Structures are given as structure tokens and as C-alpha cells.
Image: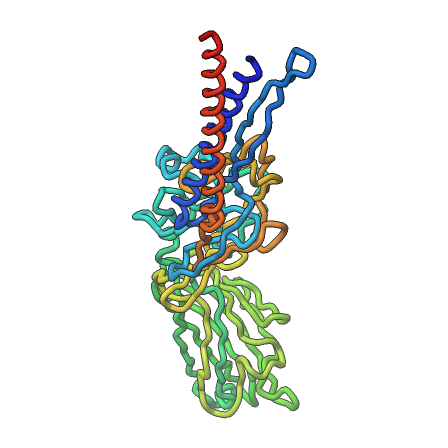
Amino acid sequence: MSTLYSSFNASISGLNANATRLSAISDNIANTGTAGYKRLNTSFHSMVLTGTGQGAYTAGGVRAETTRMIGERGALTTTNNATDLAVNGRGFLPVTSQAALRGGGANMPLMLMTTGSFRPDSQGILRNETGMVLLGWQTDSDGSIGTPPRDSIGTLQPIQLNRDRFLPEPTTEMRLRVNLPATETRAGSDGAARTLSLEYYNPTGTTERLEISFTPEVPATGASNSWAVQITDPADGDAVLGAYDVVFSDSMPDAGQVVSVTQAPGAPGGAYDPDTGILRVEVDGQEIDISLGRPGEPDALSQMGSRFEPVAVERDGAPTQSLVGVEVDANGYVQATYDSGLIRTIARVPLVDVPNPNGLEALDNQAYRVSSTSGPMFLWDAGDGPTGQVVGYALEGSGTDVAAELTGMIQTQRAYSSNAKVIQTVDEMLQETTNLKR
């Protein structure tokens, strides 16, 4: 009789196992349209029990185990949002919860996603509709991120766009292309100074100006071919920022070109570098390199003819610029575009890798967490190593194959019915045994 009763237990375990599989199938079908969903796979494992009598057999039954196939990736679909992100490899986007961020962010938990539709919130922080906040390395003013640790998330920060919403670009370099009249350095000339205004952008993004004056040195006889150059700050009472003596050649083949630039004794400003043709001045803590040209360089400061001609004054920098758009490239660089046309890297999103992606702990909203079965995490640069690249304007589709799930549902229904039929048959056999006493 124990063998017969064991059939009950085996069939009940069969009902439970197929119910588990049907639950997984229903979850998969329900998430057909969920971006980044990873399907559940159900596997059955037999349980074998050894009977006590010779030749006796006791049915052990079956147990079901479900595994989320996190390592499988769905197809990518294009969107019109630049910060809809997906990964075209085995890597994961690092995220954390908005609740942890509101709690102060001292111990932000690391969570992983393979895709997400991120948009800036009221504070400019990129997060998706479920509150997952995108993490990355914020760049320095020169666009670099240094050498952050790769086995720790301590240097990861929420990607915040409004930190760079209004970006000034202070001037650091100027290049002068000015012709000075050779006739003014001859004996008998009036020695009048020629003045040029140089506009530049300060660190607050506003426009300021410097004055540069060219005063010829008039000799008693002949020609000096020499000019006293003085740079002043009109905003500070014409304070002198630099004073230099410039000598030009008057013979072939370098006629009209700079021969030497000498800093006036005791004058402020940096020394002239003949290898670069640059001298440096400082105004209110802002250093500006001014290029007069190298000795013998034709396209720079020159002395020709009888006319003062400012050909061009070139400078870098820009006034305060407004952020108009953000994109993330394949290497994870967050590129900000400003209304001036400037494109600047403001952050970089790394990709996380673990030895066993299917061992990650599954959380709500297609997020995952590192576990003992997944192995330790490591931060890779996107586009480098095994993690793949970041794809903007894209979302990863669900990993559910509806046709395969419906086929599995039919198989599960048949198996469930068969186990129920076994229970019915055993019940009838036990009834026959009970009827033997009549």
C-alpha cells in the first residue's frame, strides 16, 4: 500500500511543479512589453526514494526550480530620447534608488540594469520612471575623470545635468595679427602710440577688455625698428599687466618680422617664450596667453609700410552658454551641447560586469543586485573589455518569446492534467481495495 500511496505524493509534487512552471509562464507573458525584462526558465528535477523491501519502489516525485535568464539580451529598439540607454553586450548600467539618494547618499546601494529610459528630474539628475538613478563619474573642468577604482562604487555619483546648465568658457589664449607702420620708428616721426582693445571672457562668462598700446621708439637718426608694447587693464585704472620691447628686422629675408621680444625691467607679466611666441599676463587671477608670434614667423605681429592695421585678434572662450541637449556616446561619455555649439564631456557612465550574470539577485523594475552566486562586480569602460557599448536612443526589449511561452503553456496544461489523472486513478484503486471487505 505504501507504494500506492507514494503515487499520490509523486502526482501532488507534479501538480505543484507544473503550477510553478505555469506561474513563470504567466509572468513571462505578462511582461512581453516590459523593456529589459528577463524571462524565467523553469527546470524540473526528479526526486528518487529507495524502498525498504526487496523489489519495492517508492515514487519520489519532482521538484521545480526557476532561473531568471539575466544573461540573455533582448532586441534593441530605437527611440527619440537621447538618454534612453541600452547595452549591446554583457555589461550593466550602474544605478541606485532615488530613496537612497534622498537619504543623503552616504551608502548608496549599487543596482544594475541593462536598459533604462532616463530623464532629468527637477534637480537635473538622470533617473527613470521607477526612480532608478543613473550613476557615473563626473568629469573635471578639463573633461577628465582621473583614475577611479574599478572594484568599488565609492567614486560613482548621480549624473546631474544642471551642474553644468550654464557654462562659462573663460579666455585662456589670444593671438594677435597686427601690422605696425615701419615709418613710425624713423627719425622725425611723431612717436604717437597705437592702441588696440582686446576683448576677453572672464570666469563668470561676461565680456571684459584689455588695452594694448604700441609706442614706437623714435631715434635721433635712422630707424630703430623697435616698439614698446604695454598691456593694461582699464577696469583697474589702467593697471599695467605687462610691458615689453619688440624689435623687428628691416633686412631680407625676414624684413618686417619679429627679431626679439624683451620684457621691460621690473615690469609685471610673464616672460616671452621665443619657442612658442607667447607671453602670459594675469588679470584678477585669470591667466591669459597672448601670442605675438615666434621670431621670423610671418603671420603674426609685423612691421611693414606706413599703416597701422589690426588684421585679426583671435581668442578662445565663450560667454555664458545654456545647455540645450545631452547625449551618451558608445564609450559612455555624457556629452552636453550648449547653445553656442560647444560640446563638452560632463560625465562618463561605466559598465558593470560580474562573472555569473544569471546569479544576480533580481529586484523590482528590471533591476539586479550583486550576490554571492553572481561573483564580485568590476567597473569597465564602455567599449573596452567584455561589457560591450552603451547605445543611446535605444531600449532593450523584453526577453519573452510569446510563441515559445504559449507552447510551454500547452505542455504544462497537459502535464498538469496527467498528474491529476494519476491521482484520480490511485483514488479508484484505493476504493477497490476498500471494497474487498464487502
